[in-house]
Image 1: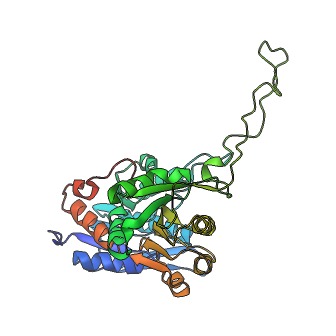
Image 2: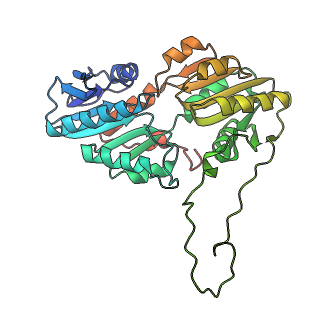
Length: 356
């Protein structure tokens, strides 16, 4: 990789993923900036930047982990510290953007990812680099440029090089909502597709949207009288869990953007096993693997869970031998190099479609 042409670049990191930050710095041939990020006895976050950032392009490597709120505060304080120390440009490299699943209105809640985007821009960030957002529309919440990189080329390469007889595989969408992503993988690998429909767990899209409070009933109404005056939207009734597509005697590869609570993946794997799939893989960009996910995976019909290193999961790998990691630091370091040298980012988005 061609090194940055100037020396006015600095890479700093919080406590979320120091290993990834070191990998990126080594690939760029840049020394890590001296930064101390710690918590006081009252749990306040303290940031001390040891090196001068005046007039420099500062890249802050910080991802979302289980300690999500501390990760966010560390990022905001580091960005504001660089801003008040006269940094020329502040770019956040956030491989997994926290709160990205809370990007829709729920009852009397709020769109948390928009709030987070506003806070980030206010702290002094001028650019954000992230990977595989849960919903691509989140980019519109930011008042600064956002590069939403894709990990699919690395996962496709893993399928072709590390899964024996992958030509006998079928790409599986865990629910109808992830059918587009599954179709994208299937078309690139020239494989068939299957969709699991009627999952037992309530899907994210089925959560109640709007308010329970009914509108007030007018004293006199010329319209039809149905209940309180407004027709009630019929509730969804999911059919029994079923697989649309043939997986008998095939390798089943489930693809998704995030693996956190694995119970739905384990339930899907059981159904695929019953339908005749002889090997089951789960591929995802982000591997949060919360709570007892390693134990559930170990005891399940899943043969392998492949995730990238956007989130640290070394402890989970020690607890479960089925978890494999794909390194994506080369993509992030190339994005940093191109942005720093004011080069086009088009190559990193070559052949990327709306479904990816």
